[in-house]
Image (tube, rainbow, N blue to C red; front, side):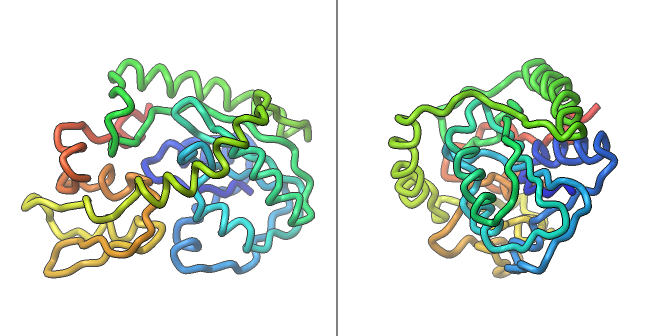
Length: 254
């Protein structure tokens, strides 16, 4: 079974493509994460976990969920990351989680997908041609990954150096605490009160107040789901996102 979380469609596309190639099922973990539903998930085939990369790791809320959920049936697991080009130490941490669960970890790899993080000026926006090229290259790579999984082989990724662990492990929680606030989120008069942002927030930090979304709490994953999925493009993060175009995978789906 292919398990996944996806904010803007990149990881969902990878997961569903793999499920089709593997003749298997896929399961979106969003509702389970929101509801703290750790009930057993059973699969006769190997588990394939697909996850985005946030601050050089898998999302912390996803890691916490995978630690607690019971996976039964097949004990083999593969991990696939989507990233803007660097999955950091995510694979090392994933291996640790699944070995602790008594599962057989058959490696991890990453697929470069169009970057969706627009709440920072650190990254330049991609052109439509660059986005489509990135997706095509990922699709070509998915076929080889599926063949390896079908054959029960091990998928491999680049070597993670010790300095990456030393830098990232303390850096990630500090960055998430300081640079992922909820306060700068705002909504304009373009809001149509569809509640889509509320339904898609994995951490349940958004609720409706007076017909408009309101962000509260100290935790935010900056997954960009609320901003990127808003049909009216009414949501912004401070002034940083105001002139940036929104990205959803479905806009480029072939």
